[in-house]
Each structure stands twice: as structure tokens, then as C-alpha cells.
Amino acid sequence: MSIDQLNSNDVAPILAFGAHPDDIEFGCGGVIARETQAGRKAHMAICSLGEAASNGTPELRAAESRAAAELLGATVEFVQLDGDGKLEICAAHAIKLAQIIRRVRPSTVLATTWYDNQHPDHARLGQLVRDAARLARYGGLEELKGHEPHAIQQLFFYAVTPEGEPPNVTPILIDVSPAQVINAWQAAMNAHVTQASTRDYIDLQLNRARLWGARAGVAHATALFPNDPLLFESLTHVGKGARQF
Image (cartoon, rainbow, N blue to C red):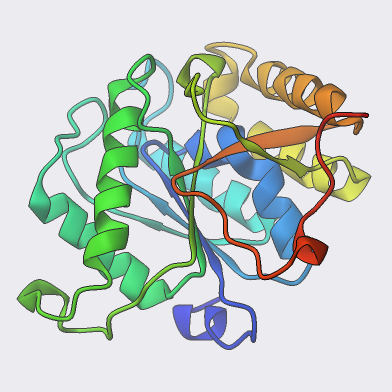
């Protein structure tokens, strides 16, 4: 599926950034599956090939990501920045990510959290995506002249590990309980065969989703951390609260 096909839908696509080939699947794969199964397009931008990983070659990890994206119903591309474990925060990287935002033209962007207590690439990518979302709006940057300026509606952060969850931000919870969503999510995580030998990441993510779901009275939920307060036109558009009053 091409980017042109992504933008042919009436609903603007969702764009997810990951620092490594498995971040999106493990951190918010259930959210991607939920969106695509509802008819929304999703695109994944992966900012390294996992070159520093203990298991798996860059070629294998890229192949795993392509298979996982297909299982989630998403498209995928790989972005060359500094490489796994070497990501630096700089204007050139933010501009490169802003180019992707302008090309895909999403309404919602997902990225790894900026919180420091996790893989440094995750925290740095979160900051870069936040900068990129702002730069994508500005018409005067010469490097971005290839595509029209674009303002996203929401920026949400996801945590690949519990340690990456920012402690002072109230998350929104996405219900990923439907069987077809869980099955697609689990299959996408299982596609990363090389990483399963390092740690039982799949069980970790499903248990996290069960814990968040238990707080909201559903079987599984994924926490997303908003960059800004959410704005609603009316209380009729607000979902139910996670607290079971």
C-alpha cells in the first residue's frame, strides 16, 4: 500500500514512530490493530534497524518488522538517523521526521515517551517527534518545501516498558480487548522471533495490558500519554472514565 492510498481514506491516518524495529508492536501494537480493524490507515516509521541488539541481524529485524506491520494492517518504512544506541537530538533529525509527518499527513501521531528511565533512544526519539510535529506546521523551512505544511491534531506517547511510563502524566486508556485485536497484536509481537530469545516481551506486554484493563473494567487496555490537554466540542464526545464508580 502506498502513501497515496493511505491518504485516500476520509479519516486521516495514524502515524507511529519507533526507535527500534519492535518498539511500536510491543508498546502500542494493540492500538494500531484496533485502529486499522476499524478502517483507519496506519503507517509505521522505524528509526533504526536494531543494529546494537544482542540477537538478530539488521536484515532479519527489518524483515520481522515488515511481517509485523502486515499483521497489524499497517504500512512501514525505515528512517536512517544515527543507528541503534547512537541517536542524538538535533535539528536535522527533527526536520527529517517532520518530512514524514508532512508526507503521511496524519491526524494522530504516536511516539515513544520522552521519560529518561528507559532505553536512551526511546526518550530521545520522543523529544524529536515532538519537535518534528511543530516543525511540520511551519511554512518557511526550506528543507520542508517538498510538501505542504501540516498540523496534527494529537500527539500521544507510548511506553515500551513500564519504566518508560511518565509518573506525572495521566494517560488515556485504549480498550484493546476484542479477540481479533489481541490476536493481531500477539501475532505481530510473535513476528519478532529474534527478540523473543532475549526476554519474554510478549508476556510482559500482555500483563501490562491486563493491569491497565483491570483499572478500567475491561480485559486489556493500552496507556497512551497525551502531550497536551485533549479538547472536546461537547461532553457527549467524551468516553467513560476508567474508574468504576
